[in-house]
Length: 336
Length: 296
Image 1: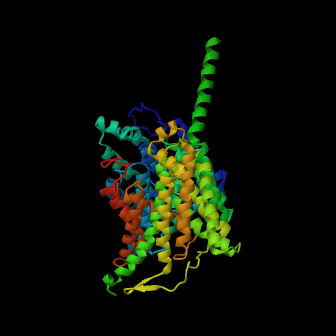
Image 2: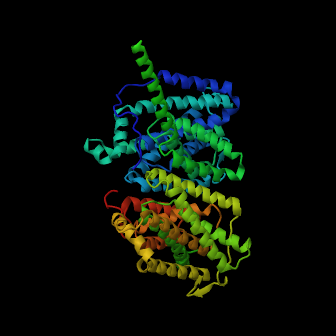
Image 3: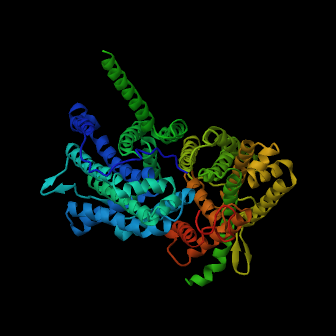
């Protein structure tokens, strides 16, 4: 089925907060606006996509299930925020949580029937869900504004503090992402996380050791949809619009690609590749009509040459080099 | 207007569309039987069939039949290239990677077509006049008859190909029992290669047939391909008869739905049918050799 690189088969259950390595990433994130201020808008978008691909990584990378409909959950999040804030005057923070709840609720409703399926058929069923979402959004004009969508969604604000510049939005989005990374890190180290890996390896074997396969699959689907809901809410708050063009099959393909390129069964990988692919689409956007064919070709080449993801290959080589270097130093010390 | 009065008219357009879906579905089934791969770029063959015929008529000034023939040949070559450049290097990859690679190929094909032939929707003239025939109060466009006739001819020739020629028999053998076919010296990869060609030919002929009825633009392929796939699942995954039955069933259901729900939701109907069939009877109407009834 899915080639899966297991992170560590003997993951102990231990609360994880922040490690030394994470301070490096955190520092880089904090300093980025100072070093390279031009990248801020791109990084806001990359952060939103990173939340999406982090959620999908739990579903696709850990549980080994395919979803080509995640853009729909992203869209549900964005539309929930847009409708609640513009029509009903709900404060953005309330809409933020409501978006995740709405996306999770939809995931729960369609998850039970759909997750019976596997492989190609699961991919097609989720893709079908995404298309139905788009059709409904385009047609129910009174609620969603049809093809043109909803404009004038207010900036995200928290206790009177409005996130109205790219710099503030950058810290907002990446702050949310850090919170979700902590959640995800603890999740994959929990009983649920180990159950996910077992389900990905073999559903029959997982069921035979007492894992409730259906519950685990639906559970992780709901969680990853909630992540997409959060991302959608931030997207609506940052772009201040929600229109159906942003939530099509193209986005679903892009985020699946982020997870594959980041490496299946990793949490940091999808984040890095989200930044990389967002940057790539932005660079290619400069070539106007040539951008999509080039993007498709790059996508196919990446799949042919790095089917396990760029991140994991680099990681494996780096870890090997570092451990080799460590062993060599220790040997030298002993000899001396 | 009374929705029931529309039904005979809608039935006719449903059957016409169903013939196209059946051809697309057969394209999927041909590849799946040979290689267990689902080619998400199948719909692009249909789009390219229509768009390239248009280009040969308007751009190169060829006559209609010659342009259609050339278009089919070009699309078959594209199908071969797709196999050689994308599918063959990935033949040992996982399902997910193959899905993404064929989706990537679909992006490349549709957007390259937009680049080369423009993004405007294209249409061709009907094969024989626009004057609709009236039979029992129901109007039938001549092109509908052409579509149905051509579909029947194509199905017969496909049957002839797979049962009467050496190549067809080899393809059939390779899909029934890959190992056995290997043992008698039939190259599996070569058979998959030819399956891509046959599938591209069927897709492009469907494209040539459908373009006079509907506008074909560079982005039309994805949806057509998906509906063809839904038709194949609906009829019974992996069976030629299932693909044909599913195609007509889907075309008729979709067309009849227009009488009862707003026409904007028409594209959603096929996917609703898909979710229902996957939930209640995943092996499809006729049953499927690939799918166990309980789970797969």
